[in-house]
Image (cartoon, rainbow, N blue to C red; front, side, top):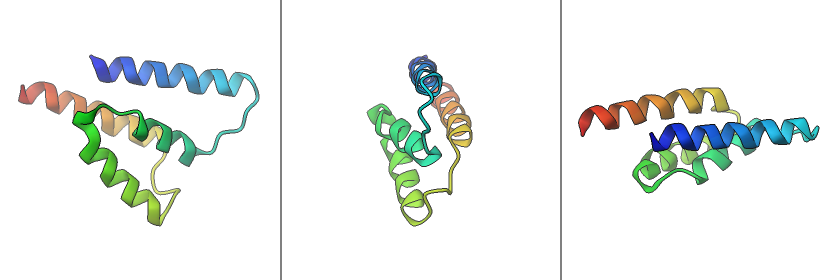
Length: 79
């Protein structure tokens, strides 16, 4: 899956930054993930961007990953 590959690369990047003792805010991780999504996920990304605009702590990265995996699965079923 392209979403699995995206999330694997994102996880690798996150772990690399953590290994260099860089502190990364959860909201920065979420925004980075949202900005890197494929076009087919842009409506979902826009919704989360708007949600976080009002409250940057509204969504944890682990929650976003869960939602993205569910969305990818539902898109596969719809095809």
